[in-house]
Image 1 (cartoon, rainbow, N blue to C red):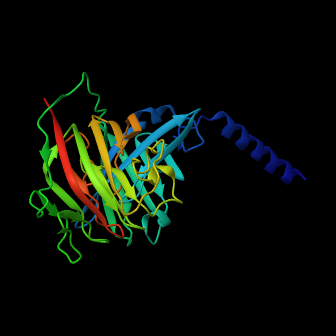
Image 2 (tube, rainbow, N blue to C red):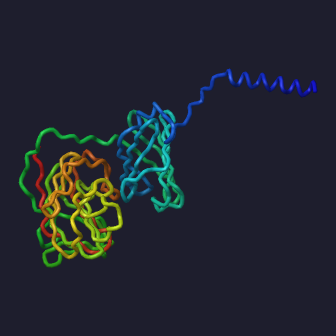
Image 3 (cartoon, helix red, strand yellow):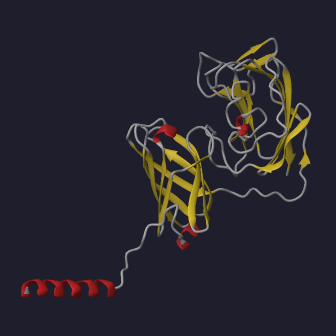
Length: 325
């Protein structure tokens, strides 16, 4: 009994000391924990993922509401999607992109640090090889005043691919048939030689049955063209900015019919007129679409026509009107 009392007495002293002593460990803050330090991470970031032989544009937006962290992420392809995990500890961040979204053997776990308002870190590539990644704050791209428009520039001559280049050699390849530019179907993308910042763009297109393409504005933001996505979210439908903005009112799907887009893009502000009806009216595009040429949102960039999806889409008149500085 005396031995037991001694043990209990010692345990009581230990417990008292443990309660009395302060702790200096810095906790991790996750999606359910308030975090004042997370303020430095909040907002939009343009990311670049670097494998051994390739760079992939990416994007993340980190938010905190009622003390809870959340993030939406654009990976190497696809649209912005919520992440299941984001944690911040001091100047360190960890977030996870699920393997099913990445076509990977394991979840891609991103570990990084924030130094001088820049992110840098590592992740595990889809095959398990180590990758690095960097991030800079996405520019606001606010414009003041109405732009002065320059002279319209036809981007397609109706004869050949002059003024364009494919991202890879075919087959399949882009072709010109009966004066129309035709997507290859599961082939390369087509990139204009002309680079632009703010502009108006007129596009005439004809989408075959169960086909898919898109017009990437500045090579980064896809305005969708499709007849195969009726069961997908509205922002994946023709006239929408893929994954971000749904067209409203959405126009009927009309395969094998010539249609028009008239797009005005200034800063992040986009207006899309589909077949004469305004379906997106001065809305902000938050970030890039998966498959973008790069994530350097502040730079002028080409128009890019998507050829990597299935089926065939034809283009004829493609006219760019740049804004003059």
